Image (cartoon, rainbow, N blue to C red; front, side, top):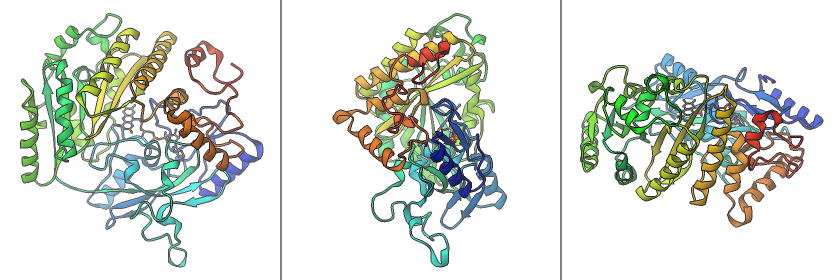
Length: 494
Ligand SMILES: Cc1cc2nc3c(=O)[nH]c(=O)nc-3n(C[C@H](O)[C@H](O)[C@H](O)COP(=O)(O)OP(=O)(O)OC[C@H]3O[C@@H](n4cnc5c(N)ncnc54)[C@H](O)[C@@H]3O)c2cc1C
C-alpha cells in the first residue's frame, strides 16, 4: 500500500510504477463492498490508497450548490461539514454512507434523492494519467484568471470538444485526484411505503411505476423489495426464522412476515416525494390512486410504523443523511460476505418477469435466499440482488460464484447486462458487451494501450487488460473463480 498525501506524490508513484513495471491499483476509500473492496485484480499490485491522506474538502460553494473534493472525503465527512457550516444543502448518499463520495461516483454508484445518479451529478475532474501527466476535464481545462481555478469548473459539465469524463469512470485510464459534485438545495420531503399482497403483483407494480417515473411524479429512484427483506432488515439472523438448508420456503417467510409491522405481504415499495406540503400531498394522491389498481395494496407513512422499522432509515437516506443501517442484512448468515448481481432491465412488466424468473430459478438451484432490491426508474431498473454467504465456507463461496456466473450468462442470453460487478466477474460481464465482434472492448483496449503503454494502472479493472497482460491467461471467463477457491490462485501460473 502507498498513502500519497498530494497530487505530486500520486504522480511520483505512477512514474515509479512505470520505471519498474509494477502494477498499481488506486482506491479512494476502498469501501466497495460486494464489488471487490480494496482488492486489486492482479496479485502483487501496489494499492494506492488515496483516501488515507488526501481527504480534504477543497471547496463548498453555497451559491453554485457544489463542492470540490479529494478522494478521501466520505459521505459522513461531507455531510458533517455542511451541517457545521449551516449551509442549506443536501448531499446524496448510497445506502451505506461510509464510502468515498468520489470513489462511489467513479464506480457509477447510486443514491436515493433526486441527485441519486452520482456520476451524472459530478462536475469536473482532475486526473493523474498513467504517464504521470495531470489533466483537468470540463471547464477546468480553461485556466482561470491569474492562475485561479476556472470559475465555471463546477458549473458546466461538458465544456468544449469530446466529453472525456465518462472514460475515467469504471475504467483504468487515470487516477482521479479531485472531483466536483453538485449538491441539492434542501427541500421538504415525505417518505412512504406501499405493500402489495401477492408475489404475482410484481409485473403490475413495474407497469404502474413506469409512467409515474417518466412523468417525474415519483420524486426519487424508489426501491421495490421482497418481503424477505423486511425480515433481513430487522438485523436478526436467518436462523431465528428458519433452521433448514436451501432457500427459506415461502410459507416460512409468510409466517414470520405476519408478525412484522407491514404484515404478510409479498412486495414493499419505498418512495419519497419532495416539495412543499401542498405539492407533496397532490403527488401522493396521484401515487395512491395509481397503485390502488392493485387489489390489497396498502399505504404507510413513517408515523404509522414503529421507530425501529426500516422506513425510518429510508427517511434519512432519501433526504441526504448518511447512515449504516443497511449493513443489518449482513447479519443474515454467520461470517457474512456478499456479492451483488445488478442487471439493467427495462421498466416493463414482461421484461422484468423474464429476469426475475431467471434469478428466482437459479437462487433455488444454488440454495440461496433471494434478497432483491430493485431501484426502479422510468425507463430501466437496476435489479440488485444481494447474495449473502458465509465467507468461512469454501462450499458456499463456490456456490455463490457459480450462481453469479450462471446469472450473468442467462441474463445476457436474454439481452440483459450488469451495470457494475465484482472484480472477479469483470471479464465475464465485459465479455457480454460484445456487439460487433467485441467492438467496444477493442475501442477500450486502443485507449488503454495509448494512455498506459506499460500497462501499470489497474490491469484487468472492468475487464480492460493492457497489451502486456492481454491474452496471457489473466482473464477469468469460466470456472477459474471457483478453482481459485481451491487455493490455485488467479493468474497465468494457476
Ligand atoms: C449493505 C450495502 C449497501 C450498499 N448500498 C449501495 C448503494 O446504495 N449504492 C451504491 O452505489 N453502492 C452501495 N454499496 C456498495 C459500496 O459500499 C458503495 O458503492 C461504496 O460507496 C463504494 O466504496 P467507496 O466509495 O469507498 O469507493 P472505492 O472503493 O474507493 O472505489 C471504488 C472503485 O473505483 C475505483 N476508484 C476509486 N477511486 C478512484 C480514483 N480516485 N481514481 C481511479 N479509480 C478509482 C477503484 O477501482 C475502486 O475499487 C453498498 C454496499 C453494502 C455492503
